Image (cartoon, rainbow, N blue to C red; front, side, top):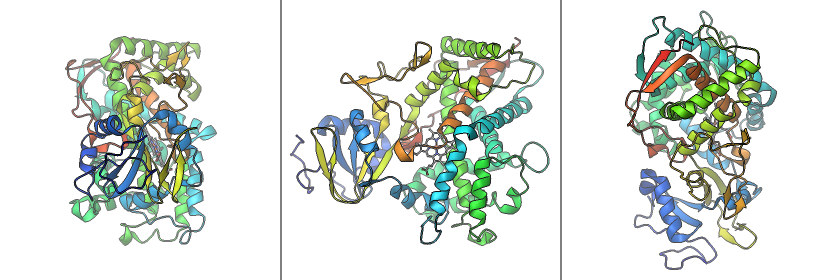
Length: 486
Ligand code: HEM
């Protein structure tokens, strides 16, 4: 039974309401400061299911991962897309995709996500490998072979941003790299820094230059520019066709609410999480040389099995099948995602109803209430993951294969790692993301000896993106790297 000693006007049968002295703001400030800590405290006080008033919205958190499957499979009464449709268009600056205004467009946009998966993943992966190799060769392979230093975040960010951009949007008309890439990334970072505020619906005019910066970013995708790019992914080609049919594309004066901003939204989705995820994956391996050694050896073995003796003087290609065989690398990346991810899965109640939690329990929810899963609590649960704050690179390996059985209360968990969300809102780019992080780490480990300049420094997680994806490091670290001789 739920605690009754609450200052609550909620009805009997509803989850306990976490009380707050500031009714409108609710617990937003505490939540933003450290969401994981805040939710753990409430769980200790109120149990596995409780409601918090956050920024004017009633949010019911389901904290027990054994209850996740019931929420994730819940159909009609819990809507998946309503929440995103309310906040995402105004964040990126495209008009809401309403069926009345754009008949059929919403479904076609969702169908375009298939072009990131299945058979379509192979050309994307191949193209990403070539682009990463290009960036590594031109920016990081100098001849003298001595030690160099660089900000590790900057290293990951510049390579992943540019190679991802080239893979998804294509190459410029002349040359193999877009000349404006550094400027584009600079503007992108400025936008990304205020993203948590925009998505929280802070009006853009309160955020300094953000509106102008966003328009500049959107204008990068004007048809007269994009039409000159070659090697564009099927995914973006298909989406361009869809938006070109909307007929407003020439009106550059309306860049604050423009269909072209969909391209910018995809740029954001494709790099904003991938960059910090790549940082953490690379960082943890360099920090743990014994793990790095095992991961590197497996990459060399997989190449050798494919008939290639690796040489640091040659171009390297790893196929999609070969990437699938790198179970130690995959486990390391999963382990760094477990430690750094903080995404929130949100559903909106479509009517007043009793939400079934398990065979014995249900709670009443009201129309408009938000039901939220917060997987970071599961990722850091010592009952599921022993010694949860520590990086164990082989945590997700068992008998030379990916490990999938994790338990709570003696019961096997259906969901145990959710950096990419769940159910029908799960990230459509997750397979591509995993492959590109693998490719980056492979190149880093194959071509370089790697060290951290200060081995004792350990960045913590910045929590201002809690609920939004992969958290960024609180401080950067300095990477020392040198071309490997053999
Ligand atoms: C959505 C995570 C990389 C494209 C999402 C969501 C999460 C996520 C948590 C929201 C799921 C939800 O609402 O429940 C990540 C992480 C990545 C990554 C952790 C990297 C490590 C990518 C890449 C692409 C991509 C590389 C594209 C190439 C998208 C898109 C959506 C999305 C288009 C919106 C889907 C929709 O509207 O339903 N991602 N993502 N993501 N992601 Fe990713």
